[in-house]
Image (cartoon, rainbow over all chains, first blue to last red; front, top):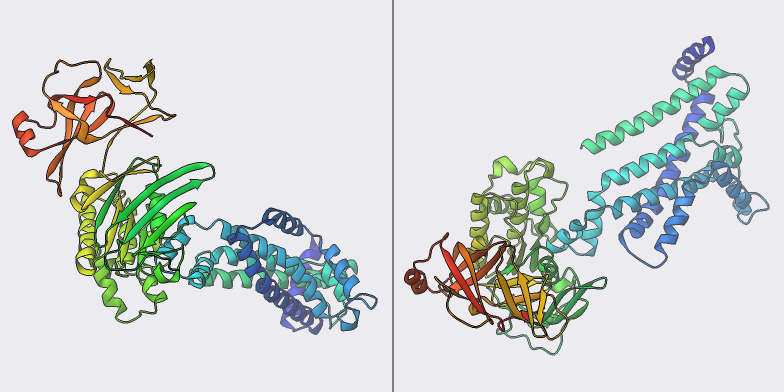
Length: 228
Length: 348
């Protein structure tokens, strides 16, 4: 029990003293998670809208594939991305292995199905009378799409928060694609795994606290936006 | 989208030709020919599931009929067409309010038309039209309104657009008598001020007859341009090869000529029904049913009185002239004999 208490004290010390290793990992985490979220929302939102709004042949099969992707293990994504961007891989020349960009790509693959699936479900659940109401008020196709998205903004926000939670806490992709290089590709989660392996629980707890704080701030901001 | 029908001032607001609409394999509308004149107020009467809402959606061009064509002012139009979508407005039975304030809900239609001038004054007027106070309601959110208030806000959101056609689906289903009066007045004003054509579906016959120029009744997707007609549903029993009978629980029997093809619902036109005070001598082909007058409604245009006769659990309608009313001294509650011939039946 003592080491947990000591961990909390150490955590506060590390954060207050602006420990460079800790803050580099924090910064790397923020950078990759923000990048991957921007990419996954940018691609997932329109895909989710199309999937939820329109009926087309093969829609059910596409939903099944997407739902399967929701359960993709992060180590599998890490492995697949690694295979593609390693020296021997088809994208090896881009030099993305052991970079934050590489991690962001992997995390985008992780977050994309979450954003797409939740957005599609949210759109599918839109009240049937909404479209009829918009048409009867004279809305054109663009107005209908924009208004539908605005009407389900909280559902889309939930999709983003869920995906962000998954991205922020994953280890497999960051470890395999990033390589856990100190001051370079080490993220909070890979750092926690490493410190715990070394028996340095205090450092691990400190980083864990930072992770929780980031998640808390993000959710607090979104909750504030929702009230607005 | 145009076709060979010439656009002239004489064209009706709507002309529906050979319309058939299906949900899956079920036919919900079957209209051979229907015209709705510009600037008219048409009432749509029919039981739940008769096809009223579907017809309104087709008239709003929010749905494409499975078969047939709909002409708007002489032009054939397709759903969501740009040329008409700003001219026709539909108020659905359960109006959907955007998850915004009352102000933003009413302003929505104007904003997408880029009509942002004098917004506050126009919204104030629109709210006043439906009996809502601007100060009290404008900042309220959608979830802070009662069913009746939401209905009136939705109505205001349509009235502010000054539509050429206003389609109202059960507009007074969830409002009180005062609000029903306000919606009636707002509808009449829309016609008076902007020449708006109105098609209104409602179960409240009294309210509907007080506002409409004429009524269409709809049953199982079939339109009757003579307004409410008498519908007798089965089960029927076969009396002989040419006759079906329906036994009422009070022992009375309705005799009807059997349909020539498979049909299960009988329509008896109200014009073919006669009221007497006592049973007359006649043959077995004349139905004489004993019942009570339950209501009397003035049909404005024809100045005739539509009387509803309750015969056990069946309500039948008969048209009467004011002279007949006074001559037979008819009033609600009075016992009467409703007479009609067994061959005066149509089957659907």
